[in-house]
Image (cartoon, rainbow, N blue to C red; front, side, top):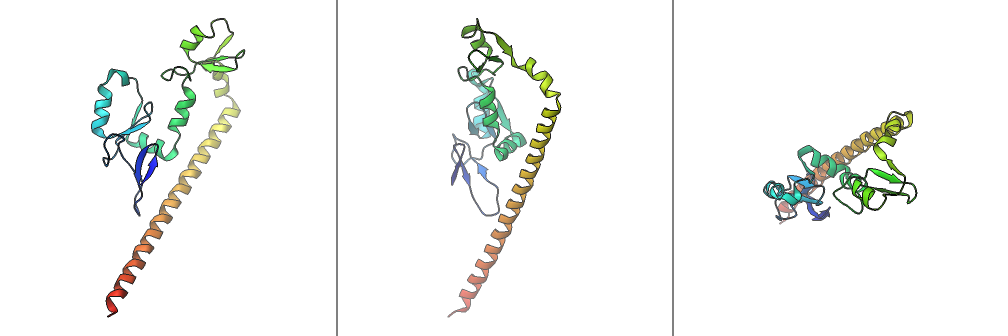
Length: 179
């Protein structure tokens, strides 16, 4: 067994990695809480949703969970978007004086007298620029290429596993012939 983001992953020939619930060993995960950074089975996911403390947590299920698992980007992107002082708050402001990005809470508490830039307004022009479109296209192309390579690797592993099983069967058959 290997660890994937703290969850156990099995490596069995010809199968994809199964992710197990952090709280229920040997039960396959049905969801991933981005904020808690844990995998949950269906039962734990429903309990998790009942707690008021967790009501604003982002829980990925189904294809969203498996997509983020394969690409490994959900945690990285979420870390970048969240304020370092207030983990539940998104970054919304930039202070040139302190060379810092922060949330609305920090804006009113720590940067009240600073000249602040509201990031979404600053990004509007960039999102429509040619540079942004080129970067986005490059990332999409890289993502497609990565997915293709991953599929080829999975197919190769399956082929090797099949050949391995075939050779083992031949050896076992040969052993029965030896007195």
